[in-house]
Length: 497
Image (cartoon, rainbow, N blue to C red; front, side, top):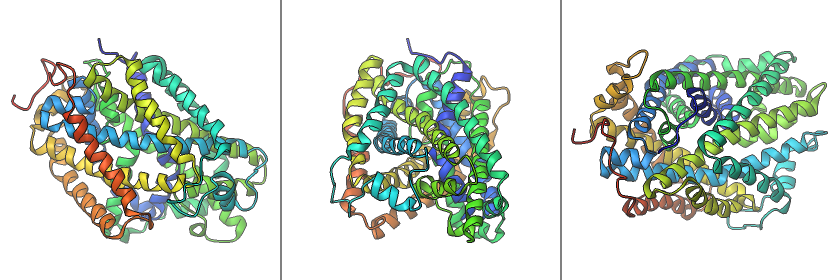
């Protein structure tokens, strides 16, 4: 008997917890600000409506209808589609092993927030004191022992959650983490808006540059952010929805998940750029001179901004990094669960055994990312996983379903238990709009990487990551699974129906 969520609320919170991750807090505000500001909202909303929500509905329907993770769901439509499912699972595995390192850094910074221990040189503190960064990727530099305690702590917490399963583990973790995340962000936003210079930060984020809408790169950025943010096209949502009761309304749930996630992105961005605006005000420089994305925002810019606050500096540092920790944990457990589900479904393992099969190799490999060269490997792995892997996975998914299967069958399955039905627009978004945009993005990213590389890292390392995804997917597809792995539920549409 397949495990099911205790309630629809548990599933929604888990889905929102997966979607609301580190990218909401450190990626969206900067992406919006540097791609047209307020004008970026238009292509962003268009991307949500034409790709984000349609693919979210598609993946919820796949998981619920075929009662399996990504490999099993695609295989039960057509055996030839199974490799795509494993490609998505391996993307999740790759993200898992480096995501641990980011959460470890966040825990360290919760401690460093007491007394703002990062000092005046936050850049030097991060790369020198915390990461002890080496001169390059080929100079590993050994495991950094001061990171071992938080590293093992994160692994223990994650192992406890994952071994407890869907209801006693993930459900409970999300119900604990999400309220804490929301409370922290609300306090940060309120405080940020009361600071001098906050309006300058918001102006930088929201002032519309309408000329940017004519730039195709802005639209590509919008679609990329939607995929990055919603956790689509790398097995998570198919895995989560495979544990849904049959009568669940996937259409409403998809709209609710997407709207909550993207609303939170904008809300969090208001708080973060309000404080960055204050930092620029204190230093007498433009907001664009201090704004940054990714780890630069989280571990360099924001600590500097916290140090400049007129009062309660340590408290707001703690609140920010606790919010990052809770967001990171809910995303991390969802990524791992997608891998566990794929393994468990094909080989009919117990949950405990499948969890062990996934966690043990992930634990071993993740040590690489707390070495002196860890940041270099993390940066390249993140680029390969997100800019190449997920985007390529997304375009292949919509092509296979939209053009080599009958999406109308899935639209009918989605509408069966929905309060309002999705129309033909859903089908055409998958078949045309998403294919064109993601196809263009995939080709341009691949051409860019194979001709120019990425950040000067050795090309052969990137090829290893790509080979891991492609060759690994082929090997897992060819391996014999349990009897019945390809057998679809009686009421589920198949390729030959």
